[in-house]
Image (tube, rainbow, N blue to C red):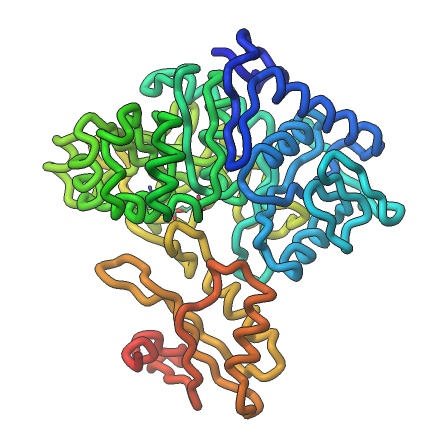
Amino acid sequence: MSGFDFIKWSFQYSDGARTALVDVDRSLNWNELEERVQIMAEQLRGLGLPRGLPVVVRGVKGIDMVVAMLACATMELPYVPVDKSLPLLRLNAIRKILGTDVLIGELSDDFSICIHAGKVVRQRAPAFRSVEVLRDPIVYVVFTSGSTGEPKGVQVTRGNIADYVRWLSGSPFAFSRDDVFVNPSAFTFDLSVFDFLMSLHVGGTLLLFPADEFKSAEFLRQRLAPLRPSVWTSTPSTLALLAMNRDFNSAEFSHLNDFYLCGETLYPTLVKRVQERFPHGRIRNTYGPTEATVFTTHVVITEQILEKYSSLPVGVVKPGTTIHIDEAGELLIEGPNVAAGYFARPELTAEKFRNGVYRTGDHGWFEDGMLFFTGRTDRQIKLHGFRIELDEIDAKIMEHKLVEQSVTLALKRDGEVKKIVSFIKLGSVCEDALAQIQRYLVEALPAFMIPGIFRLVESLPYNSSGKVDHKQLLNQL
Ligand code: AMP
């Protein structure tokens, strides 16, 4: 292995002239990457930030974000990736939860210190909340949807990462420095952590293109294919979109042999479609919540598996970790990959993480040594691979002054979520109420959480046990 050592947190490459990163505008070799990380680490050192203080890293998927994340991590400042498209209200909510005032990325008035384009801008004296420094330092905090209306920040530590990288460095994986990794997920989702870590670890090449680029046939043919990607990582939804493009095949992408899928149910139809395009491709299903460091299980989907099971397994649990199933069928994860709880949320952490065991809210069972995922115990859904708490959408809609009640549901076809629908009962009548509510949501929530359908209702139907009748509501569509 050569590249970046995630035990010592330092560069360990042997050939500095090899390409480490490529993004839309440029590429960096290993020497250049190390130099840029050092410069930024020095800037951070110069700010005299207390160890453990989170730093928001805002931008689009690209070299600048990687440099910032590595500089923070080597300085023991947890980085918090935030996409540039995130509404400012939401960014501010995250800033408040973190109690930090430091941003790497384009200037934002709410932050006291911004580092952007190589310059440090101090707008005011920063206000830091005292930070608790854990024995195992936090490397990053990834925010996911929270059912109470506030996002929650999962804290992943050096120990979690060392354990994950150790697993991926052995069998049944065989990454090398010749590998070229590509993954359209933004750095705000933990699926992006897999190839970020592994390409750095083995000294391979990491391609950094925002998700939107992948929609263009020209980009695929003229930009991506010549870079010879060998390892693909995404949600099944994203791969399905890509597979609609005829140029996505083994003739154009002759080095692409490994497909890592995670985050939502993988259907046999997609596996077969990808196999037709890539007859030598290995399609791997993986499963795991952000709270257990990217993914915890793995399986290569073989012909035998496709023949034997109509619902595909999510795989074998990684060594050193155990997945327990409680009496209610809920999956509990225990092991060195379980994160250090949620940032500044002691009650929620105590509820979900008990004695190093994470309560996933997922249902499943084991067969032939492999885990099968069957669904959720709560109202968390996946839409196009995005993790969303329907209760968070309701909480936000009900913050609007015109709304009395909101019931947000997932519209499914063949078990798969197709759309989010919000049924809204107004408290006060107003002609353009819906437009006002929609405008408010666009400012308060990330785009992927905005419902696709809104329905104003005069009253909500109730079932015999006095609960809102979700079935009846969906039947109204
Ligand atoms: P995230 O934290 O965004 O990675 O989302 C984690 C959740 O996604 C899990 O708790 C599951 O509900 C779901 N999930 C992850 N991987 C899979 C998979 N391979 N198949 C089905 N659902 C999955």
